[in-house]
Length: 61
Image 1 (cartoon, helix red, strand yellow):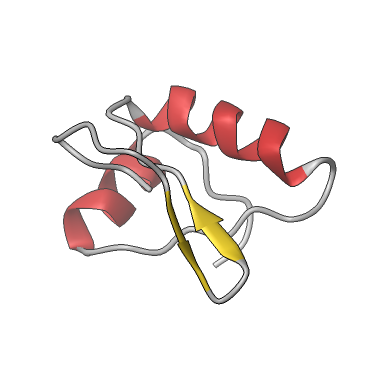
Image 2 (cartoon, rainbow, N blue to C red):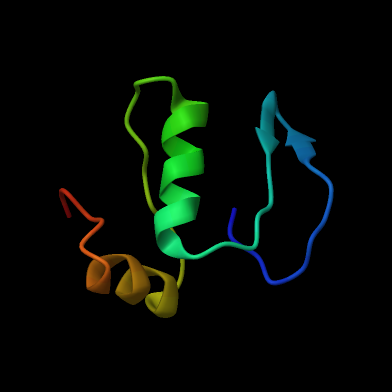
């Protein structure tokens, strides 16, 4: 999860959420590594979506 404040991972319902403060390219690279070849989905507010779109990082919408 993108954040402006570093915090430790949180586990909820068997899923661990990791928080990073990074630009979209680095965040996507980290997510792809964690996904191990599976799809990576993007969620967030308008600013997050616009940042990923502007960087050309969205394959399907």
